[in-house]
Image 1 (tube, rainbow, N blue to C red):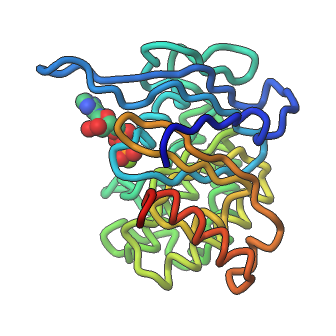
Image 2 (image 1 turned 180 degrees about the vertical axis):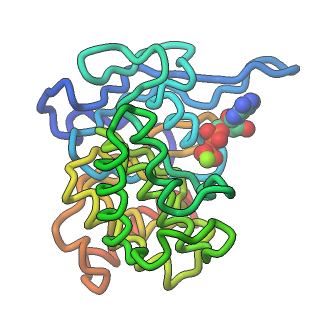
Length: 266
Ligand code: ADP
Ligand code: MG
């Protein structure tokens, strides 16, 4: 691909809103025995409020690190991240996270796993339970609200993980390869469920995946990163036709992004 500069701000619509997430000149690394490993180098991105953005890139290019920075779980070595009119310099309360494994509390029922977050944030037990039941019904889990995590399939457990995050009504939902551990058919259903849930709630979503088709299908924009050190090599809005996996737009866009990931001569 050679040297490539992407004017992400120009591609990524320039409207300003304090609800957007602004990543400005961010570099980050980890200190080790052999000096600092640069994980992210000079990242400039705007995540539009209420938009679903997908990130694809090779293992180790810093995708999880970027989510950590947005969540305020780590501070960048240089540059800044802004959201809600302030620089993120500590845990960002606006964020909820979903990982590959949902890490449910094994001693709590499905319902309790969902209710505990909002209840801890001061929502009344009654309201938290009502919201939990509604969200669980939207992902087809009404019949298992009393079940325990070990009784669930991988797909069901991940649905609980997603509902648990959304039950907090977060402004930002960070999803780090959330469907990597479920089977292909479940994955397709989960994609549509998540799409419907966040469309309804207006949540800003940053969704990391290895699956290019998933990124094109779900994302209103797709960011492509390269590794060693992690950089943004492309950021493009998706057209409406990306919602149709059989459209030529979908197939061509996925192929173009795959080519970017594989690099020249692939
Ligand atoms: P990705 O999620 O894209 O696979 P990561 O953000 O996990 O990438 O990692 C980016 C780079 O930073 C990798 O080289 C990884 O080895 C390194 N790294 C990530 N977390 C740590 C850590 N806690 N300590 C040291 N190095 C880390
Ligand atoms: Mg990762």
